[in-house]
Image (cartoon, one colour):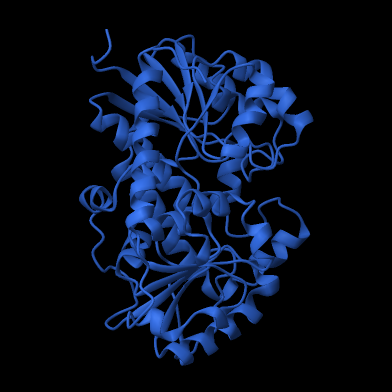
Amino acid sequence: MAGHPLNIGIITYHAAYNYGSVLQAYATQTKFADMGHNVTMVDYRSEEGKRYYERLYFRGQGLKSTLADLTMLPVAGKRKLRMKRFEQFIHTNLQLSAKQYRAPEELNELAETFDVAVSGSDQIINKHSNELARADWEYMDPYLLKWTRRRKISYASSPATMNDEELDHIGPALARFDALSARERSACARLERVSGKHVEHVCDPTLLLTANEWMRHVPACRKTVVGEGPYLLFYSLLRPKRAMGVFNQLKGLSRRIGMRIAVLTPMAGNVPNCAELINVLEAGPEEFLSLMRHAQAVLTDSYHGTLFSINFHKTFWVYTEGTKEHELDTRRGQVLQELGLTDRIITDFTQIPAVAVTNKGQVIDFSRADIALQAMRDRSIAYLGRAVYAETISG
């Protein structure tokens, strides 16, 4: 009977030291709990994933990756604190399974444990993700829910850069799901082709919670090293190769807007020691939310940086080194189009007006975006309600 509490097991990238990954896991868990269900986060951490996230250097990712990691030797202390904060957040805020699993076959003991098994969001069905790129295909099996004999659903799972031949490889497993969904509209048709099932378009889990709900569940007090005074947050996934050029541009932007810039660049954390820039590499998930909440404005090239900027009603810009037209085809661009915010895309830091940062003009009107976002949120929550109770989901 629809409406009664269920035992739900979620498997996703919950332990990646990546803000979007951990916070999407938390949001998925929270939404199911808010719906009245008993939720467990399956603590699956493959050896490849642990090696990638828990080692600072020599992670088996090749020479270029090793050299990039070595450029961050001067900030090793910040990186270690960041890792510690991630683990603290994971163990404090996620309802982890009693046992941690390393290999796919170990999860078979959970075959009858849950009423519903949920394959969560993020790039868990992308063979090119950090956790799976160098692992055998079988290490994707836990995310394809091959371990459970109960109801199987997915929520906002992304194949990202998988090509058609690779998708064909996982098609039979997807066909055995009871309900499928994807967070990118462009992925829905591709997954429908290989699964033969309808794939619902849903929002990223981080958007399932409103800004007020985020603050209620994870109070974002000012626990950063930014200190007093306004700042612009630069959150980027840029690599060391182009970092110096970007950092120099940020110095110029700081002087132009008369404001310091908090720099959060997990993959290129060796930020110059100067008056204009503040390196906040040590931020964990809770500190990330705090940085977002208190920022005067946000500049980002990150998907989840974009989503949290929108959700928190920040003055923000999405930076791309390509063209605006190319950006519209990305997952960031797709969300910006749906919410009518494509004017936030810039290709050069000089396109940021100083008056917009200081809130003396050009403040974003989020009224239309809020309506579209709430419709997206309502549609996604409705999908979850139907999917867990075996109601028919069709296109």
